[in-house]
Image 1 (tube, rainbow, N blue to C red):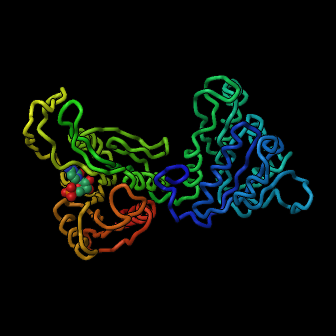
Image 2: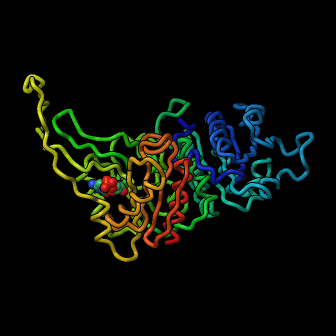
Image 3: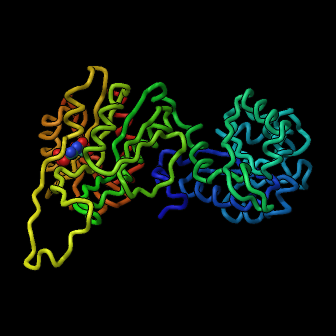
Length: 413
Ligand code: C5P
């Protein structure tokens, strides 16, 4: 599993981006090392500044050893570049302060330049992402809340602290936000906002068709491809709603609107109600085509069928086909198809047939029998066709990279 378990951890789009991370003196300072590792693992360059109080908790050597370069300390440290306080402003595309203490919020809100981090923030014209972390009473204090409002007015994005027990033994809002939220907020701030203003619905994951009180009919979908599309669209500015089958364990941005469903008919009802409000529909869910005729809510006992037994299945509604047929001309539809195929040309032919059968604009077929492709893998290989007759083989790549390319394709239709 990748470090933060988001669906875009393996996206290569961000390689060579430059981030600057400011770390302040909170107990959560040690968590900044994991954030750093997550960005570095994507090929992102990260420079770091540790405030004087951060250095009481964690050492500059830790960040340098993990790969941060440079690691800044005091404004007048020996051997430091004379204009070190201007460097992040010249080189980095986004500055993140995580964790940000109450005092750091005050200094950043007031435009102080009395230490290296504050001066670097003041000289930074790009996006500023701030993840506060402090005692809940310090967080709710009017002074802190006023500083947060000022920072928001200045254009900073605040990744709100979570609620729960804090290191000091109190309970309330003040814990550093989950790391994946900070990680994703930074990626979003450096992504093109070419899907801004679009409302996108994505069906994701498996469905479970219940048969008796304990048994159901399902498939091994993990929702990774669908969530990669949902998160890529969100990174690029779209408002995203996911209609999500059970058992998906991925870390997601809290801004995704999410409807959890269990079986195909439920997914159909929810998606059908949402669809008129959407600009794009992405149908990745591995919806069960049939449901067993239910036995009931009790457990079927082995003793009732010593010789075995048969189950009747009834067809489920086809969500993609129905919604594609009902759509307004402006609505764009991307469908998927899980196929067994001997080679990519056969897969392309299956994609063409399914594009026509489902009335989609784009149809992406993946070979579930090929290595590193299909269910429960981090990578995929697809044969993609569109309604204008364009076709492309997307050879094995991370689902995140494929999702990025498919979003671009949808925009270009
Ligand atoms: O017909 P098939 O199951 O191969 O089609 C796959 C595509 O149709 C996927 O995009 C899947 O999400 C969608 N689908 C659906 N409702 C169904 C079956 C499939 O939306 N009942």
